[in-house]
Image (cartoon, rainbow over all chains, first blue to last red; front, side, top):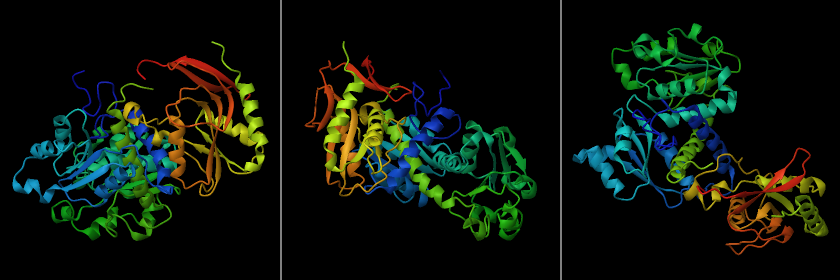
Length: 324
Length: 168
């Protein structure tokens, strides 16, 4: 097997989580099912289980992030792991250390797992290829490439509200071009058997040949939202507004901002999702964000259970080879 | 090897618990075999308190050896553990490690007034200082033999013997 998926070990079990692309449905479902058992932990007197007791997890954030870093930290702590947060954007790299030197140093401190966020696509892959085989790497977002745990928590949320993936029409709306979230969502949705995935965006915010990912392309919300069960909104990054991609925030909101009127075009029981942080009045109207169909806050809660599932599966995999 | 009769063991266990009816237990079964025994006891003893079901997967001491068991459903404890007299129920008592994990799991929900242990069969071979207050039957089994409870469509119990595979 020359082109083996770098995320899987020789037995086909998950070794690293780098992208949802190419992951078999069985592994995606294993993560969702495991997360299901962690949801209840948060409601107990003791909000902690001892599975990762004595393990050291390093949060390597080469790019600023509050929410993702915090949910990874909470997930690790609820599994009883020790968490070390490194804000590398302002430490070693600014002193000239290379990425792999940083990783070597942290490995020498007996790390068991790295959670990596980096502005460069492929950074987590590079680290995964480089580390000792007993160290696991989780990609917490690399460039505009992938953000697999976000996509997995989105899948978990969809399954909670809509049960069967094979009956759904899902629309991803907004800045697909720059979005690692959208790419990971598309791969996960198609692998899990969603028959129709649409992307709705202006031409300037769509990657070339996006149809090759198996999605239907719409430029118009009125047509694109018809019969939709799940709306996955994307964040419009304000820094992109300065370029030539879009005329203005007001213009964008007028055509692609999700208002109650536009939401009424989808199915009456459709759910609205957003990975956060939201730009109210740019990609989503407050009435929708706080409305009855919004599942944006449950997404955040489920994100912890999903990250606990990924971490415990990876840690359990160190020695669990082909049992059961 | 002659296996004990699981139905006779169940009737014996049920009679012992019935004789102690003033104890006012909240029943908690360990998934999956212990849950079957607990469900049947809960029904036949007409216990008025809600039945709890426990998964031990978060507290198992062999996580580092065999990983997480995702097949089992999570714990469901539909009552306040604080101050409750709990009767913990399992099918087979062997090393005592499952019971240790179950007690840890229960304490994650609160501080019970007491925990007693009821088991269908004691196959001996304890590795921890754990003993059952109620036991259906007991016999000796070599370490590499595994004993498993089965339940047929009519809800009747039987034991099955299998050999531990080398990979475990």
